[in-house]
Amino acid sequence: MKKILFCLCLILTTIVLGVEAEEKNFSYRDGNTIISGRVPVFKHRGQLLSEKAVDTFKILDEVVRMESRRHFRELGNKEGNPFVLKSDYSKVENKVGIDSYVVKTYYYAGREHGMVLETPYNFRKGREVTLGSLFKDEVNYRRLLRNKVEEIIIEGDPSMYYENIVVEEREFKFYFSEDNLVIIFNPYEIGPYESGILTFTIPLEELSDYLKD
Image (cartoon, rainbow, N blue to C red; front, side, top):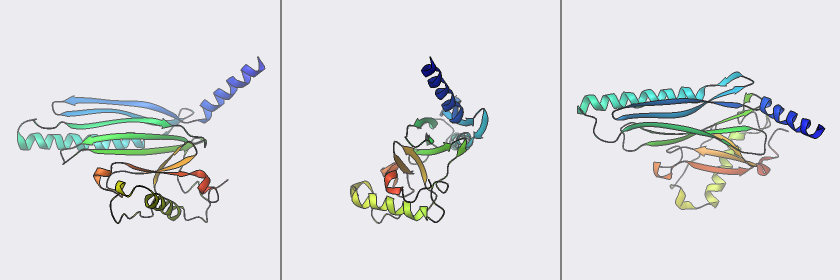
């Protein structure tokens, strides 16, 4: 009985300490416009942490609807490819005690092609995690991670990337998977549209000397 109670307390503690992703759904269809979204609102112990994913979805929603209306005004009909916005999300399992979520979005607003995006969100103990908060103060983590990404590119399959690729020091988008830090680049950030979403997996073991305890 004591063992059962201990396990139950452990489960309840995990639920309380972890971040909850409350699902918010969007659905709209009118002729040539299709909006469908499953978007997370992040909370901790019932308190709002972040609505960034919802805010981003609403901005894209307005862009897609505006372009659809403009298309209808200019062409006088609703023929052609539908104007679309779709979004979904998932939690990425890892072994580092950080709640990592990735929101995947596709939208088409009348250009040459649609756009696919991945946006990660990371939380620990009820607070959003930034890369800067993970590394020791004296570490230039932007340069460190840029160098790691460039190493992976050099050692990998050259056909996956375009020539003369330049990875700038920046506040990289990231999430954690298993024992790895994963860096994300959406289309056009470092490669052409055809390259799609590029991810670079860096084992945390390689970063251990630079991370805070």
